[in-house]
Picture 1: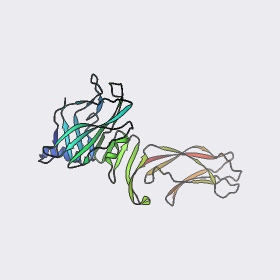
Picture 2: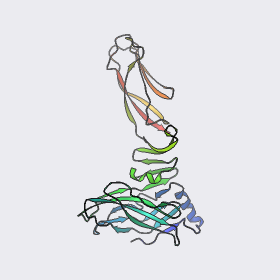
Picture 3: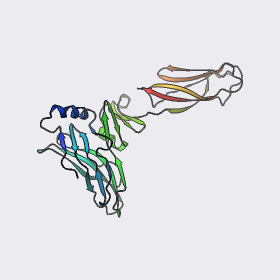
Picture 4: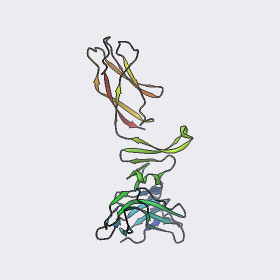
Length: 286
């Protein structure tokens, strides 16, 4: 069972050996944990509505806490229906400063309940959201809210844990998406989360006649909104040129900030209404 953690960052001194580890961790993100298993929450067998919180390192609001062993908690009994509870690491800067795991009741809705958020006084680091069903002695669901930070990158386990990392300019990878807390000048100059998929995204494109004649020259002038600032590679696949084409060729160009995929037909025969192609847009970098 866990005892009190070794905590660094509360009022006092930090020696040079600890500083090397503490400084790199607390500068990575507002909240994070050390490794894959650190502070992981699982069901605790043999304990009614029980959960187990792994030991290890967690970081929040300038404080690094290292719990030497695991801890367990029994969540409250639910009278009817189901209820979600937030497991958090609560940091309290009052003398003597301390970090402890706490359980905060929520509602039947799967969302983060209100909790302490005053760094330097009392603040809560979200660790897991846990659901209890009335009449059951075993935890029904656990949503992992942890995040990991290192060398300029931040990764979170679930979208529900994203908002505790909300800060101007934040970049958080969750699954196959990059979540960016960006400045939006067109929306009153406010910041908001925007989501960019990180996988290749196929885009079906239909050809549009350029000159309205029987000539088959055609183009698609479009904008791929998922990657407004990305460097991309465009791969043409599944091309259907229509019968009789003798000098088909294709061109990719940037026109007024929009990517234009253009297919030219060299013959003068009737345009094939089914002519078209598929493009795969592959992100090379930002």
